[in-house]
Image 1 (cartoon, rainbow, N blue to C red):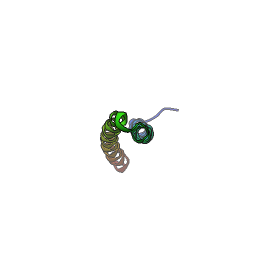
Image 2 (image 1 turned 45 degrees about the horizontal axis):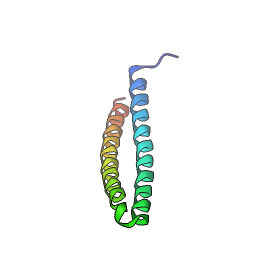
Image 3 (image 1 turned 60 degrees about the horizontal axis):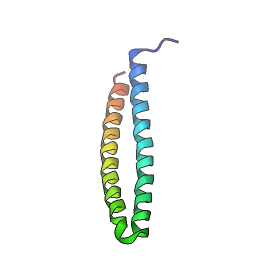
Image 4 (image 1 turned 90 degrees about the horizontal axis):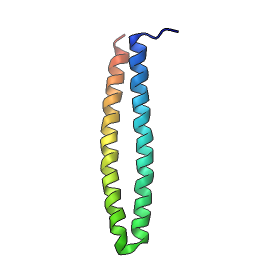
Length: 80
């Protein structure tokens, strides 16, 4: 089956959005683990707390990227 240009764009943006959400899930798990170890190890846990903050920032950047991809996807779909 031959795909049109529009179908290829929709598929590409959907894959990108799914990748973003998988990344968000993984980063969220890392944040939770870092907070757990940060609390568990006391003074040495400060490093884990810093990592959790860095990963929260990464989550924010991935979320912004996913919003951008969703916006592009809507534009392609509305171009009918």
